[in-house]
Length: 333
Image (cartoon, rainbow, N blue to C red; front, side, top):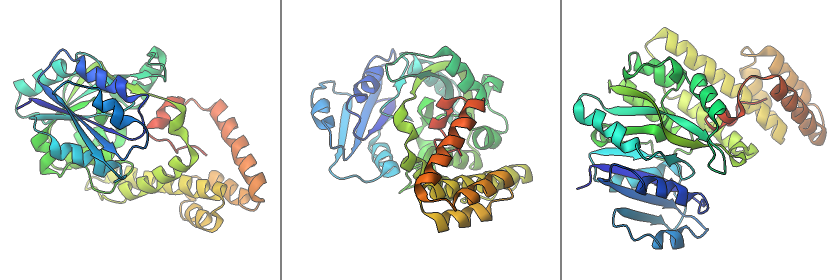
């Protein structure tokens, strides 16, 4: 029985998937199984997996697309290891990831998961030190000390400091919560961390760069941003926190997401629905809301050009690093 189960869900990423697989096979800790779960890829993913002869690799091929979280769940259901990690098919683990995280879970049975920091890499696998530092700062990891995390719910919900692909879990703890929610396409990882914290699970932070997190243009697709915002509304609407501080953050983010989705829909041409969402959330940012409503009066072609101009102006003046959009790919005007 393997000690660790590693799951890589994939979909039409045959050019990047080998880097993810090789990062697992190069681990210095070798007591693992690798489960590649394929969500109906139409490229040559199947042929690629046939080339691997390592007996630790399992391949789950879904003939039709079953959805992101459902695909992940199929990998989790097939897992046999005491510990479990899932990371994306365009990312990579550093060679010592398992060696450095397994030992923490082995030494303290009360810890349910270990999260690490990670590098930011580009499409060519090059590490970007500046973006890595900015990314760690943006998501609150520079303020986290090594060890068991206090106020875990605040860390995973408000700061979103833990990245699921850089986290090793006890499989039992995930099983108690049912792992990922079925039929979710986005925010399933945020939701899992929140449910772990609400269930009283214990998280440990290891401030080492032990995973590589890829940023590329594909992540900024307009339609993907709209789908993401729809799902983020669903995620934020799934809770009501006892802490008034956290509840205020949740309500504020719900309103912000509602406004951003409304603006995107106006830009797309779904004008009436977009206006309704913008009006419902206008108190979050009256200036942005009324600007969007004003633009909704323009013909669609002019409207899209105007949104594009405003977005470029905002990007030039914003201090937000662009790579952060992978976590929140739609939070732009």
